[in-house]
Image (tube, rainbow, N blue to C red):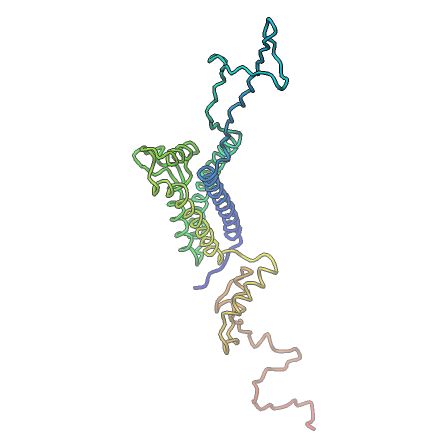
Length: 314
């Protein structure tokens, strides 16, 4: 049985396709931003500023003249310099070099929070739109409904991976594909300092790099599979879309089978007209409707004619 696209179903699927594409793009951008923040935090020192110690002031040179009653401070050459050390209380102690957080740390913190918020909203919207697509495609009987169901199932798994499930279930050690900035910086510093409480290399890189990369690839595959599933249910509205569908239909016809009316079927499916033998077969025309005026009757090809009595044969 052939599938007949319906205009109202086509509009709904087109709207859902746009929403799924936008949500997938937002989630992909959030995952990319989170991985960039991890790279800057763990492999660079852009969020730190080194405090240099103040330069020590030059000691004052005190010169004593033997023929004077009082000591006079001079700076001339050829004088006798007193070899006396300054008092301990006047000695300037060199400060230790300290690392303090600068303004870049605030920018990266804000970027990480923005990426996490955008990713959480995008993955929820993606899962809900795909669930709606399954309902619409299943109710309309779109041939690619199985692809919509597959993409919706994987979107639910993706939502569980990206959402902060560990915050609701503290027993889960995995913090999701979008970890918080505080955990990221603390884990990075503890690894650099070889702290005993630092997470393992496998856990750390799985949380901040491997899982977000897998989620990014899965998002693209989910959106692509949904597009392939609803393609048959979307009616072409422009000449370019109609030509593209006809070109795909004609390219699938084998050599020597060009007489088959497959291109007409593609045209009917593209513009939403019904197809099938009932729609394609011509209706029988009664003989009375084909009879011309003047009292003349119909005769079949090859049937002898008695001629007209009023006309003489030539």
